[in-house]
Image (cartoon, rainbow, N blue to C red; front, side):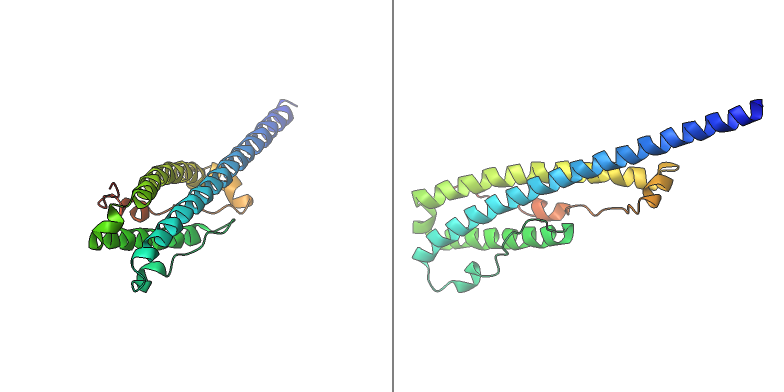
Length: 180
């Protein structure tokens, strides 16, 4: 009789642990979704500022077409790989835009262009914060997935390790001085 009660008690404890671990995974996934939404919002803001800056620059240099192409539009519900591609596209456009500002001092000295560059600097800082939040949440989930015994629950839910927003995408912009 005591053995049956012990087995039932262990089974109840295991069920509660399973539910608790499953709920923890669900909560982290919600945080990841929320932080990914924040990244998409920041990317859209960066895209808008870059586009505005490019439009201002177009008035100065109509023949510099390669600078104004390949800026990837931002969509909602992007995968991490698509986000990384969009960041690379935006970083390339910003680098080209800043090089253009160096080549055309009258553009660089323009008040509107300078204001847009300051706004872009602020957007970059906010994007970096959003990226850190996303990557921290992904780290939490990945830690659960690779740790025993919580990996059993994650596996039963079909949860796999997630990719990070790559560090070099935003870090590559550190050396670019966008203050005018």
